[in-house]
Length: 592
Ligand SMILES: Cc1cc2nc3c(=O)[nH]c(=O)nc-3n(C[C@H](O)[C@H](O)[C@H](O)COP(=O)(O)OP(=O)(O)OC[C@H]3O[C@@H](n4cnc5c(N)ncnc54)[C@H](O)[C@@H]3O)c2cc1C
Image 1: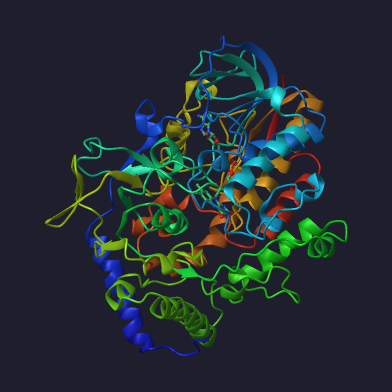
Image 2: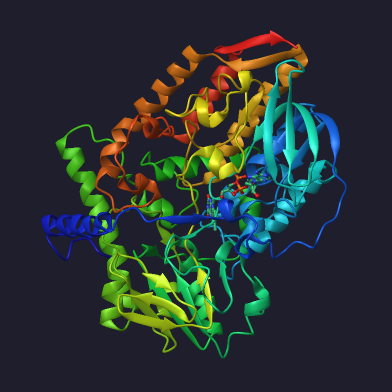
């Protein structure tokens, strides 16, 4: 185990800054958002059978937009509350959201399944392994859908294109790509955090002559095989994969096994620590699930164990809880603590770099794979086959030294003066989670007085709990901005769903229209920003990425998009306290 640095802290931090500066100098990379090219081949759903259906004209109590965990748990909690007159609409062909769309080989969840899968205790399902694969999670989403009888409520392969509030009818009118017109008393938007795939905004993306696709639209027609079957159409192919983030870390080993040659194009290396996957044994499962309430306790234990609260027992015992036993991004109370936090961060990253040097045999490749940034600047990855893949003769790393690839040609990929010909091109270039909320949704809700959300939030977001917004009656949003956050992304969204379902059920019971009050939104923003401000310093000198908002200067609008940075358990308790206080403080109610 590494317990000292191979270079001095000063040298290390200089290197961090140099690497960050290099990337800042290249500027914020332009992206092509899938939401802007929704009609193109890049965004075609490769998994759904063609669907023909008549447009639906209907009235309902609630429309839920999005059928990932947020939408599904909203539907489940609405059902618990006795609200069963609802529709759930998704562009996808089934439930699952992220886990419907992402079927690339090797795709799996990086948070242990026992903690991650929503409503696991109620469903009573035993995950096959500590870290569930995407097919298993997708199947679990379908099981959740069946258990709560959601299928009859679902409109799949349907994108919501418009949302307009009628003050006269006190209803939202929801319109879709299939010409549906659904009038609803409430709308819950659950559009996801990472659902809009993006391509690099470089010349030539549309010019490549061979097959090209994003990892979130994996084309098994081209590669052969399936999410769990080896790809059998690549043996004579040179494959290029652009990007070395969390997705590429999972896909590269599978591609390396399948293709003649794999060229991996890297801008910034990922930090990759041991995974230690293992099957779930019935004995272990019996122990984990022995006491009622185990799932909630386990989720809370994971949160506490990864934000430096050091619970007495670490129930999870994995790379996350080891790495974040101390959370170096937390605000230090004095200089000594600041030094201790920095040292912890430095040593964790030293371990990551040492593992690369110990694993990757070619010293030049190993050097290029070294991440030079602090542990929370990018989401850490955990994988046991990614680094060894670079020891194979058929795998080549093309490091662009922070710049990214220059362009795509009909034949391949250009970096500097060199063109790398490839037969198949795969974009592992991530997701847009920094463009305005309405842009990522693909529609701009129009609230009271014909004012759209983009107009109302032109100078930043106003909300109560990240869910209700003044000027947008009976609209609930489940998303991270001004909401809760944690490594286990499903946690805060599930708690928000529970909250939203409670609010809607009370408003339906009382037969009122609800709307956030601006002073309450101001108080809420204060609560959020007070929690977030102390963390800004950590991210201020990070390598650019979505966690550091690409190192753009924070204006008022951007800081209004902060999340609650304290414990996600405290966030849940804050919502519970508000509900327990009775009469929805900060919400204006008017008769229907
Ligand atoms: C590749 C990948 C790996 C991930 N791995 C992890 C992990 O290891 N651990 C973790 O905690 N989190 C992980 N996440 C984050 C993951 O997104 C969340 O954990 C969780 O699944 C989000 O659920 P959601 O319902 O909020 O959003 P999503 O699952 O994204 O669902 C949103 C749904 O809304 C639909 N939608 C959006 N706009 C519209 C519209 N206008 N009309 C109709 N439908 C619309 C989308 O089609 C999508 O199905 C990962 C994400 C990705 C992309």
